[in-house]
Amino acid sequence: MRLELKGLTKKFGSFTADDDIDLVVEPGQIHAVLGENGAGKSTLMNMLYGILTPTSGEILIDGEPVSFSGPGDAIAAGIGMVHQHFKLVGPFSVADNVQLGREHTRGAGVLSARAARKAVLDVSEQYGLRLDPDAVCEDLPVGVQQRVEIVKALSGPKTELLILDEPTAVLTPAEITELLQIMRNLAQAGTSILFISHKLKEVQAVADKITVIRRGKVVAELAPTASESEMASAMVGRAVSLQVDKTPAVPGEPRLEVKDLTVVSDAGVKVLDALELTVNGGEIVGLAGVEGNGQTELARAILGLLKPDSGYIAIDGRDAHGRGPARRIADGLGYIPEDRGRDGLVSEFSVAENIVLNQYKDEPYSKRGVVDSGAVHKRAVDSIAEFDIRTQSPDESASSLSGGNQQKVIIAREFSRPRRFLVAAQPTRGVDVGATEFIHSRLIAERDTGTGVLLISSELDEIYALADRIAVIYNGRIVGEVAPDTPREVIGRLMVGAAGAPATTEPLNTEPLNDEDTDGGDR
Ligand SMILES: Nc1ncnc2c1ncn2[C@@H]1O[C@H](COP(=O)(O)OP(=O)(O)OP(=O)(O)O)[C@@H](O)[C@H]1O
Image (cartoon, rainbow, N blue to C red; front, side, top):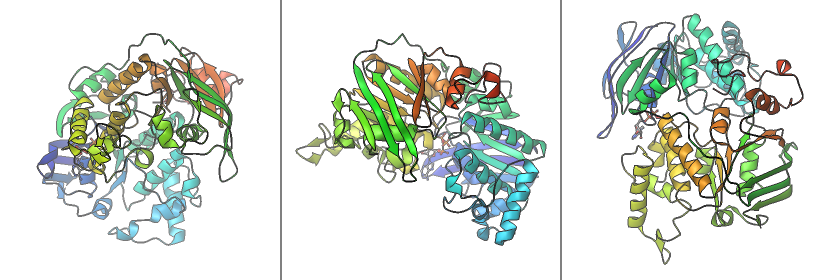
């Protein structure tokens, strides 16, 4: 399929999210779309997939103008889409999920259970996407759920163009390598791919062509040979430092002490297993690990959202036992949650309300129990400017913000008050390079004021950039604490629970994306 966009424009009220976009995707081409948070990438893809109606402009498929009144039309025209946030129904099987939604698809028809299983197996075989059609989706690792989304997108009547909107944001390094290979295979077989990512190494690794959009306009077309800094500055419109400067840490008193912490899941599995960890004031401890090894539970237990079965947590020297999240926050705990939808934002609240979410009862936002809306508004206006949150107004609902800008709202909230200890879980997930630079330098500034920081990140690059000490978590235990100059292979082996194994038997990732990533890194 040859896809051509001519002057595609989308306005929300008086705001122009996409402005006169021209773009051509040739058959079998992997075309990356890069841009800052809020640049208009998802809006553009949603128009292409029939979710949004363009305000003006044309979409042409093989030279013919098309008009979609819903995703069903786009699917029937040969377009498949994998969204930024998974849309699978957890308790359903893989086959059921692939089948789901087809009832509205013109020309695709409803499949019988047998036909749905067969569709999964056929697509799996055709593209080398291994999947068990009978597996229950919520039991599958994230990378496999992603594969289900791709198979679903490819199982339309004749999918020839696949839209992947930040498909790697939640994947492990090995899963990312696998996905990039799947993309190459698909392209080789003739499928065109539109690929959105904030991870520049991935873009370099797979893209045939790169279009950069900024504030809704195409600002550059780059060759795949473009360097990371060329891509970054085209996106942001200024030079971006991809490396943060920091001086050595000066650790002080313990700010987090975790001893013998055990959490058993409802299914009877020890998700945290006698975990021991200390973070001192004035240092950043990076918690490295493949997602799903207890990081989420550790963060939630520190905040008081998850009750441990046994063990001890102290925040700033105070036993946290019996203290709920609100009291821990009052004690000086800060929290940037990994799941902004669940723990970070109230999406129907305004941007301003979200910025003061855990502070609105305090001075100056409340006086004698009454919220001072002027003070809240002023604080929101200041934060929007300081953190470059792209929103039309502080009163806009948080749900209308782009994914990366939602993350900036949380960051603005958590960086605004003095803290003794901060848990930063995936702080730059979905965030563009400019904002990543900013968040990284703020985390270091926090450390330099004496705050203890536990950085939980699935990105080894991020851990290396920031951590003064690296703790590796595997199966709910800290299996190693190492210095920040420890080679990737060593950390990679710890991450897969194979500390003693020779390097050759436990590759973290078999296909490095570039020469620097000798173990296949996390990008
Ligand atoms: N339904 C809507 N109503 C009002 N504004 C919207 C709506 N949907 C998107 N926007 C605005 O359009 C702009 C573009 O958003 P979009 O989600 O396309 O950005 P993006 O480039 O995908 O960003 P990110 O990298 O953060 O995902 C944002 O400023 C967003 O606030």
